[in-house]
Length: 308
Image (tube, rainbow, N blue to C red; front, top):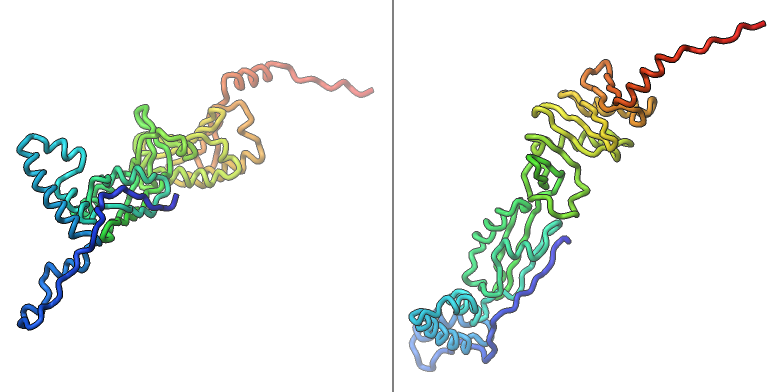
């Protein structure tokens, strides 16, 4: 999902608009000017006069309730008193426009931002909301704009999930820079490349490059294991381990692809192929493969019958 709008139920009150008073006939120049309050009233939402009156008595009631020990009940029902007041005069949050979502859901963004129907636009700190959003590992960057009187715009830039990383028995979703996004609990990330080992998260791009070099045999690769923080072992679906060199692992994988074309190595009884030397390849047979080879050596070679 690239983005969308989320609507929150507001607490607006209807009623006649609060109109600014005009100049009085015969008044002096000072009386001809609109007061600051009258100017502000021009931009206030329709019904603000009645709403402000209601809000005033609401505020008075809140003060009384606080002395009566009912403040917590009020907060649970209406939110903070100042937010309730702002919503009553038309400055609630009735619409949230969210853009930039790819993996995240609207509900996750709203929860991270702390946006609920009990908040108000007037008393919302956009900078604080941005900081809250950027604490989410999946979110690399966020911007928040207040659109008066009752809308909020949120734009996020997500970190792209690049791989799954196993460490100490736990599986994490990681970004390209190695940032841990979350525990692996969602099947939608099962498609990602799998790496294991201490520090493998920060070097996952090296393994992804190796996968690309594997070309036609990449589909049979199941994991990359970082060994001693220096080089990669690649594990195939038949449990074959290919040991790649610390330097130029991509070139070594390309050599393996060429060998596979000629020798069909993945179909042989091998448990390891050592590609760490640029001029030779060492292979280790499985127990079954070694036994079969030993048995074959024991059998005497058949001699050809002499020609007559």
